[in-house]
Image 1: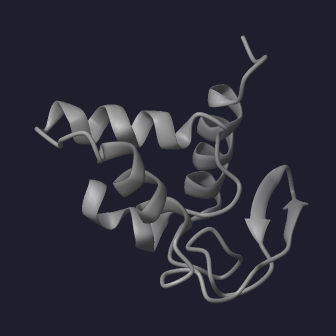
Image 2: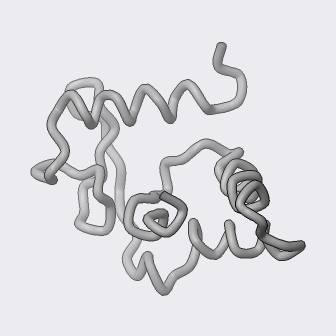
Length: 96
């Protein structure tokens, strides 16, 4: 799953995303550079060459451009998009 991050990650993620990826990498044996690797997987412009705009459509946060897997007309169904939106919302600080 960690190797899929560049293809699945997007800019609408919890503020703790790098920490979560760092913990996952560390649990798999990554060394002291795990945080740098996690940040690279999530933030590298090599993977995200375009910025995208986000909008809420029918209660689901989607990308209005092509760079994110979470866009209208993608392979994700409306219920899958809703599930991802709810999961990310639950991970954001200040949420119960």
